[in-house]
Image 1: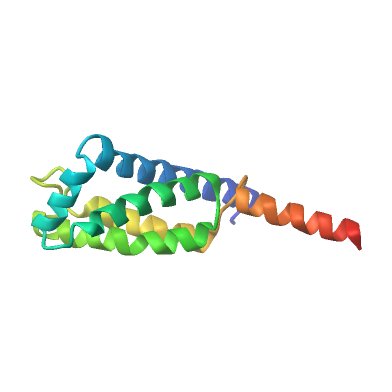
Image 2: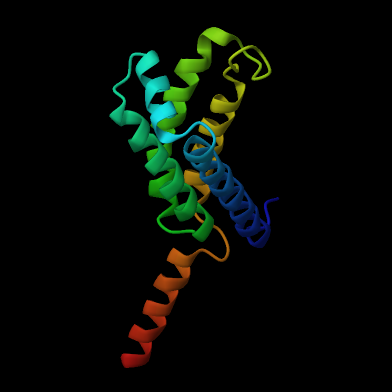
Length: 143
């Protein structure tokens, strides 16, 4: 039997973990690969270089939004196409991410976890939820 209280903390753990990973992945593209290097990599795959900047912004912004629990379901669903894109890029490399150029196991896992997060919602201590609850309390106090 699922304990609702535990589910809220499980969603929190998943949300913060995904957020930290997306933030780290976006910052990696800035500080290690550099933005121009990431753009060149995207070009080498046949994608427009501008898409690299969009992906980095989505990873950093989405990561922060997940960490703080702001529009968690929307952010989770929005990040799924990024992970599907990563999955497609890594598909020819085989299953395991330890393969040369990385396999597709982690993008597939991230995709599944984003779907789970979207289904669960933000969980405990989400800024978006805390804001909405505060608004409801203020509204009730005025009535």
